[in-house]
Image 1 (cartoon, each protein chain N blue to C red):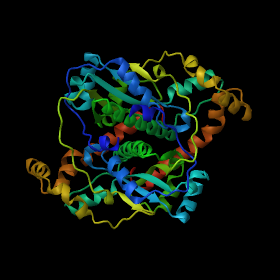
Image 2: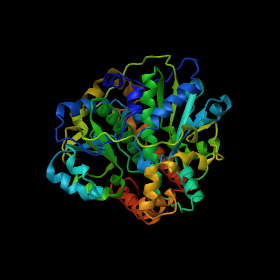
Image 3: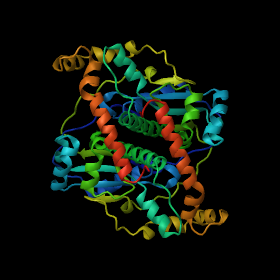
Length: 245
Length: 245
């Protein structure tokens, strides 16, 4: 089982073959067994199959073709609304309009999403996560008609793979684990040496006319202006959905 | 594989049997293959085996015995420090001191943590997540000596199981999935009927002298005062670690 996960890769090109609701439900049954806070299950998943809805979502995900090409797009949302409604129906006063509840619901959403992807891959499906969900949360809220106390956390495209890409590199695990306390004296340069040596990374630097791979990240891919603008937008969306006051 | 996940349960009692570093590393190798934002791998894991460190962490986790009884406690942290240091060493200007970067790193941390737990359970280990990590983030930061741009996101206790508890209930999946748009007209009472009918839930209501199960949540387990106080503390910790300005 571990071997299977260890050799996984994200898939961005899918066959047109559809995914049955039966299979989807089976995967949800598995995903929803994931550990969660107080067994409140504070998440919902919006299933997008409709071509028009995919077209609406497309710009939210920076026009990445997999949104319209994948047979199924899943938006995993933190959802304290269902639980709060149940409280109100039970003569109880819910108070989940706060940041802790947002973060706890987001946590449970992400853990369930990850179990979903592992279950899906074990069935021969391919997936890709879309981080754009956090950049364009408000637009997605509008398109999927998410009410207050519901907010999109991550999106997954799902389908039968039409590509078998090479695995991407990873940092050596010694760089990522620490014994008893955080070790702030690790040799960073050494840790990144393999990544920097890869021909595809060197190509990346040349194509972007940068001096170093890190500059591709700081100046282009994840730059200050975008990070700050999208931070503001994400906090606004969290507030608009009632999780900050 | 799915069957295996579908029958899982959290484990809070462990045998004294130790876990080798070799096995731990194997599980990390698997976990760190998880999808992540821009392949930046913005997380770190602090491994606690030391008895004194466990004693220090114990009150942060509301004195739950599994902290000291489990052979290994893992604190999964969002970490933009390593990446930022690499940028600085590469003549690049990192700008990850913002909320988007916090949330993106937290996302990658949680996805990796969930893969870790599935890999661990596939090896016969038991795990339990501790949500207290978000309540007591600042105290954990101090104990584990986490520098700026590093913040604890979740904690897992890990060990060979010394119990085989019954699985907890789950809501029917139809309650949690939505087609194309959020369906705000689902029958909430019906969705929660099974949960409310369970003898252990009815006992829970009686023991806490409440009128309904929902009141146990709103008045005791996840009440307004705590939610609001811990929201403030969590936001403070995020700010102190340099992710909000």
